[in-house]
Image 1 (spheres, rainbow, N blue to C red):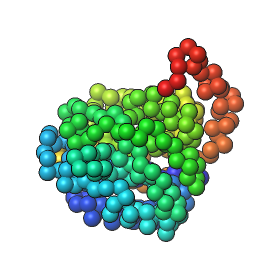
Image 2: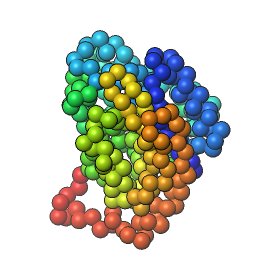
Image 3: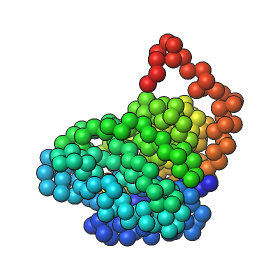
Image 4: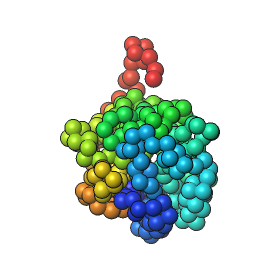
Length: 272
């Protein structure tokens, strides 16, 4: 199968960004993709960089809602498993950073909400988001079993372990990672490689690109295989549709050679 990571620059307004995203879905399908993942809040200005501005709550929408339904229609038309990320209004006053997971027939399989909420310069997320309450769902899609780790979730090994124990074969990471996080830039790939090899799964990271407000998103989206090797990498600071060939049989091969999950000692430290 082939996985596409849409390294995405915000186009200035939601409708223009949405049009580009839908066009990229067609391009991905034309290039043989079976699955596409978009970055965090790819369709909008990255508003969490602004501290405590209540007006941005008006940008939220329910799931399913207008944006999700547009992607559902495109996914069904193209036969493309699609993971997006939106600012979800779940109830009056209750908002989440959320990723709808859409199967290749357009079915909305469910929603993963970001569990770990960041608060640091450029990422004032605790004002806008409630902590996610969805746990670690794994979605049975046409192309395989998929889990989601949204942006800040990726820093927590427990998150990947829970998804792997739930049967995930591929974990997708919609993110908005910028040069403001320069202290962690040297581990940008390392922590994902570690998660991939520790759980013997594929991990596909889709980052934003370009300057948006005060943040400079550096791109460099990539895919790591179950042995922890980076098998595809996008360039820095540019729009790019990154495609990677993924062989789910590789998971079985690696786990037979080094059975990490078999040798977990739950009797010593319990289950997550």
